[in-house]
Amino acid sequence: MADFFKSSILYLDRLEKYKQEKPYEIILDISDPAFATGPEAAQTNMEDSPHEVTIQNARRKKDDFKIGIHGFQFAHFPSSLRDKDFDNLKLVESVYYTEVQDLVKSLFGKPMQIFIVNHQRRKRNAGITENVDIPYRQPVPTAHADYSPNGAKACVAELLKSNPELSGQYIEMIKQVAPPGPLPAR
Image (cartoon, rainbow, N blue to C red; front, side):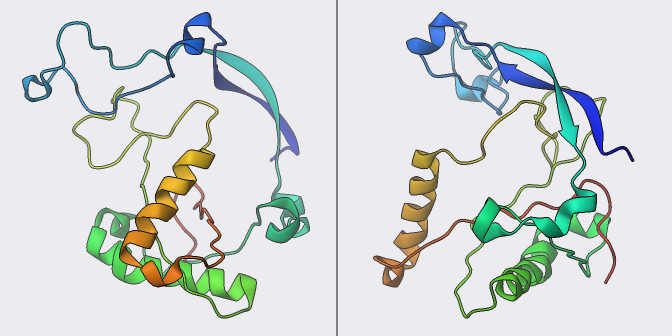
């Protein structure tokens, strides 16, 4: 694989309307009568355009990145689960969550409590254009941040509701991302 390649990423257009209303996308099927949204409701108010970007393949430099310096790090993370196992929520929570917790502990090398607050499985299905009535969501084709500062605060506030003993303690949020495709076997 080349060290650099061109790709297209969708970026939100800078429109005047976003000064008055926040961009949004509703994942649920709002045409369902159960939602009673009315004829003026829209699935999204977002307008975006593709932008060509140069992407660098980090595989040859993956050992150069450290979470304490760069804010992210690559780690070899074989799982005992196979691709089809990720369709089983109980298996993911009982096996994969433990594997992720063990990985994070090994990367930081110090005792810590680790709470997994959510996970999403995304699978590309070219025949499906909306994230409706499927057991997993499609990959996101737009440039985005998974947590805004307010979103991160809300996530921590939710964690503190069920773990009040953590109040006042230092809390870090770490996002673990598995590569697309099958995971390496253990």
